[in-house]
Image (cartoon, rainbow, N blue to C red; front, side, top):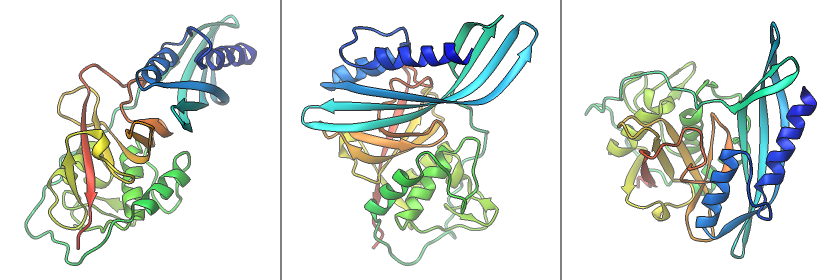
Amino acid sequence: MKEQLQRLLQNRVDGSVADHNESSCTKIEKKKEQCSTRSAEIIKTSGTGRLKSKQEDGYYTIFHYEVHMQYLIKQKSLIYMEEEIEHRRAVFYQDQLIEDEELDYPVEEENPFPVMEEDVEYRGGYQYDRLKAAQYAEKWWNSYNPAYKKFEVDCTNFISQCLRAGGAPMRGYPGRGKGWWMQNSNWSYSWAVANSLRWYLSSSSSGLRAKKMSEPQELDIGDVICYDFQGDGRYDHNTIVTGKDANGMPLVNAHTYNSRMRYWAYEDSSAYTPNIQYSFFKIMDDM
């Protein structure tokens, strides 16, 4: 059974490079199509798998496993490596593979929006260190800093850590609906909940502040993109800009489905829908 999964992964790897016309994997085809619209191509791919669990159920065997995909992308004179961790499920019937799929993006728990109150203030100034924020995002994109709590849906917690590494000041403790902070075993909603961080960035007037931009190319290293996959007004995911492609468009790092230097639009994501909405935030200095 493991040999069948290895062959399947190798077929995906082979089908992703530019000199193969098509792949049996819809996700790979979406990624190749996205590259084509950017005048880019995948010139080399590698993939490694890691078994997470095995379950026997009569004639059926179910594997949960992770795949670390690496795509070497060439765009004009720029060559860079995109990486992504996929969480997958494979089902075998009498030792024959009958199903293999990427698991759906996990749904975040419902939490109230942060309430910005007049008595929550930050006095002082700071200059956001974009390089340090990006360096943190590169160091921890596929691992977890033991100094912080790890969440099952970890995307916003990771982005908050990156912002903190860039010098963004915390404020609002101990009110979970106030400000943006993590302390000991407690945290504000805006620290760990995607929609709450988006709400906070759009409304904060002191401490960590951001300006909403109209276009992704207006963002710089260390800025934040928020994603509403369903287009229903509730944001589900956040990423941080860690690079730019040859067209000046953002490349991003993220947690939950861990990825680095991924093209910002997420059109190849299992969570993508045609109704997706984005919010682009430039982090501001507070001097």
